[in-house]
Amino acid sequence: LQIETELRQALDSGEFEVHYQPIVALRSGRTKGFEALIRWRHPLRGLLSPGAFLPVAEETGLIIPIGSWVVDECCRQLAAWYAAGVATPGLSVAVNVSNRQFWSGNVIDDITGALDRHRPPAGSLAVEITEGVVMENVAPARDILHTLHDLGCQLHIDDFGTGYSSLEALHRLPIDALKIDRSFVWQIDTDRRSGELVRTIVLMGRNLSLDLIAEGIETPRQRDFLIRMGCGYGQGFLFSRPVPADVACTLLGEPA
Ligand code: G
Ligand code: G
Ligand code: MN
Ligand code: NA
Image (tube, rainbow, N blue to C red):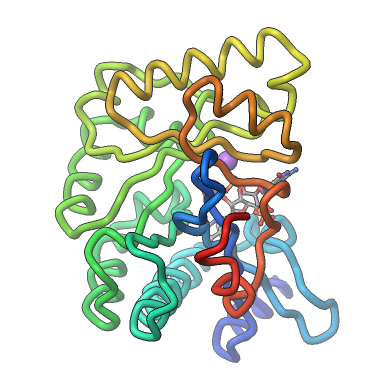
């Protein structure tokens, strides 16, 4: 209960920050967008990662107002980058939306509101939802995804490969990209089965005209494997850790 109160106060007093991790075109090394990752600048404990507070936020429902703030902040930042002329053409920011947020009934209003307030270019906001959230309840998920798509959001499926996707569902949903889970990428060059799995996901994604974004790339060797398999995009410590907005914008333009 203590941390719940603290989380509320943190939101009210502006202690949350969004950090940005580049999503890079693997061949050119250019940043095509960022994943937005929340941090808590705790007055006593320093910079806290989501693992330290999001589970409580999720349990208590505070993830709803916090998530709403994240969407607003990302739209504000996107609009600011474009207005300042530092955004490369097509630059996007992807926001994570949890299971509870997705089904709360607020997500469409939150996103509509943030887009209206800040007016970033159409298509510059992306929404990341996990494979499990969509596949557990495909029909109602499809309605929400279509609404988000009609609002001009890109849709990315997070943690892809860890759940069970129906190909038929994937084909019929307005999805733009699959994010290949880090658990497959980290042994892509050392474990045959991981490699084959990634190869299969890439082929399937390409057949469905989806972009592929590999997560957790830490070495040039992993990147080169992914390029050879036809994966277009990636993210990971090889390119950059998640960084504050002012650092993120210095990563634009130049190859990582
Ligand atoms: O940044 P880090 O690797 O610690 O993030 C851990 C997890 O927290 C990620 O898997 C991510 O999905 C989740 N996360 C980070 N930021 C947000 C956010 O703004 N909203 C939601 N719902 N989840 C987030
Ligand atoms: O669940 P989600 O995919 O949203 O998680 C993103 C999280 O993964 C972030 O917290 C980020 O810090 C972490 N992450 C990003 N790149 C790497 C990486 O190359 N290696 C590892 N181990 N973690 C990473
Ligand atoms: Mn994510
Ligand atoms: Na992931």
